[in-house]
Length: 388
Image (cartoon, rainbow, N blue to C red; front, top):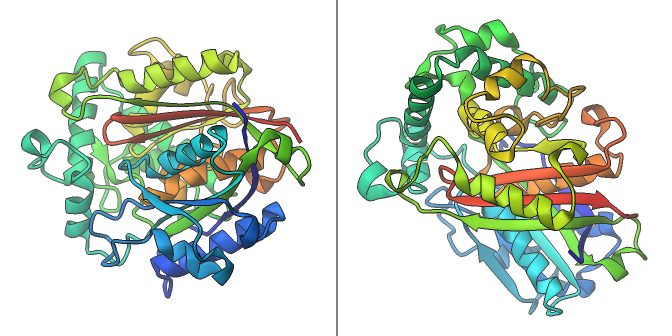
C-alpha cells in the first residue's frame, strides 16, 4: 500500500451539548490539517463519512467540510456511507484516490450526531442497516438483531455470559484512560455479569453493558502518498486495507461465522505479509460484546466456539498476547456511526506514533483494525505501520 496517514484529530465522544454536525466536522477538519502541517490549499480531495439515516435533518453534508475554511471552496467533496463501517469506507475512498494518482492529499472526516434523536427513533434509524423484509420487525432494533445472534451462539456453544461480561469489563477498564471516550468508568466484571435495575436485559441474553453507546462525535485524518509522507512530521503507512462485502440477509449466511470478517482479515494479513501474532494490538468492532467474541474467532485468534477461552486467559487484555480495544472500543468510547471507522484509524495511528497517552500499548509496532457495517455485511480491515 502506498497511502499514509500524516495527521489526525479526534473530538470527545458522548452527548455533546451545543454541537452540530457542522461544528463537529469543521473542528476536527481544521485540527487534522494543522496536525499534518498542511493548509486548505494543499488538499486535493475531501471525503466525508456520515451515515445519518435520519439522525440529522441536514442530509446533504459533503460540502459542510468546506465551511472549515473558504480556501476549501471548489475542492471535490463526497459523502460516503456503508452503515456502521461508514468511516472506514471513507478512509478507503481516500486511499484509492491517492493510489490512482487522482489526489495527492486527501482530507477524510467522519461524523455523527445521535443523542439529539429520541431512543425509539434511534432504533428505527439503526435497523435500516439490516435486511428490512426479514429483519426490520425484530424487537429492540439492532440490539434485537444481535440478541438473536447471541442466543444462537449460546445454543451452539453454551452459555457465554461470563465471556461477554469479561469483554465489557475489559473495554470499560481500558476506556478509563481514553480522554475521547464517552464513558470513562471501570464498572467491573460483577456489574457487567449480573442483571440489575441499572443493567437490565435489552435483547436475548444481552444486557445494557453488552451494548455500545449512542454517541455524538467526529474524527478526521489526512492521507497522502508514501513519498510525500516521508517528508512530513509523521507517517503511518497502510500495509493493507481490505473491504469484503457479504449478503445483507442473515438468512443467506451462517451468521455465527462472520465470514466476511474472516475473509477481510485473511486478505489483509496476506497482503501485508504478516500474521496475527505480528500485530501489537487490534481495534475491533464491538458494537455488542457478542460481536467482539465472534470476531476473535473470525480473525483466527481462537478456534470456532472457543473465543471465551482466550478472554478467560486474559489474552486480549492490554498486557496479553494480543490487546484488543485498548481504546475502550465502541463499548466505552462510544459509537457515533459515521465517525467510528475514522476514529479507529486515528487511535491506531496515535498508538504507532507513541502519542496515545494513557491508552498506549507498550512498544506498539503494527496495528490492526476491523470495522463492520451491519451484522458482518460491510467488512473492512486495515493494518498500519509507522514509517516515520
